[in-house]
Image 1: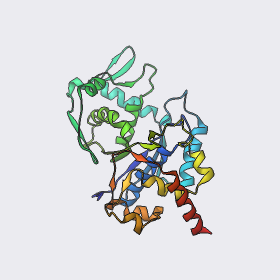
Image 2 (image 1 turned 90 degrees about the horizontal axis):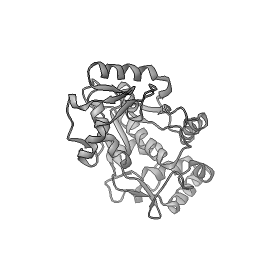
Image 3 (image 1 turned 90 degrees about the vertical axis):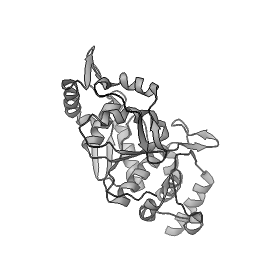
Image 4 (image 1 turned 30 degrees about the horizontal axis):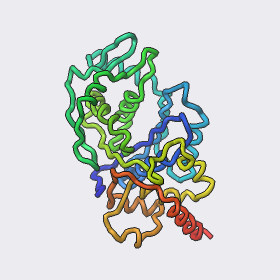
Length: 290
C-alpha cells in the first residue's frame, strides 16, 4: 500500500513540444493524487529548455488540459527562466571535478565518485544498473557548448532544488532513472527522490503512440467529461487490493480517489485503455449532473 509517512512533493514536467496526450494526463493524475493524499505539493514544471521546439501554444494547451481536469497545482515553474541556476550548478560541478569540459560542452565525471550498482523502485524493488547504463552515464552531457542544459541535468537540478521527493512516471523512463540517480547523488542532497515507474498504456494490443488519434486529449475533450477521463486513467496505473472494489465503487471521482489512493498499489504492468468502459463512465457521470 502507498502509506506515505511524510508529505510527498510530486511534479509533472512536460516539454511543450506537442499538445497534451492521454499518457501525460495519467502521469499528472497519479502524481497529483500522491501529493494530495499525503499533504504534499503538486508542482507543474514546463521543461522548455529546447528553444527551437518549445511553443507557447503547446504550453497553453498543457496547462489548459490540467485546468479542464481540475488538477490544480501548487507551484508553476518554467525551466527557461532558470538558466542561471543550471549554469551555476554546472560550474560548481566542474570546480569540484564532478564534471569536465570538453570542446565547450560540460560532461558528467562519474569517475571521481564511482558508479552506483542499483536503485530502488517503489513498485519493482531493486533495479540493477547495467554496464550499458554506466557507459551512458560516462558520456552524459550536462550542458551543451552553447551553455544550454540537457534534459537530464536540468530535470535533476530542479527536482533537487524544488524538494521533489517522489517521481511517478512511465516505465519508458527506467533507463533515464539509472542516469538520474548518479546526478542526484552529486547534488549535495541527503537522498534522491523515490521513484515509481508505471506500465505503458496500450489499446488493441498496441502501445498508444503520441501520433495516435486516441492519444490526443483533443479527442477526449470533445467526447467526454473530465470526471470520466480521470476515473478511466486512474485505473491505468493504480489498483485497490480489494477484489470487490470495482463493484463497490463503480465511480471513483477525484475526491474519493484522494481519500483511497494510499490504500492502493501502483502497477508496473502495461495497462489497456478500454474505450467501452470510458463510454460507460461518461454516461454515468452525465446522469449524475442531469
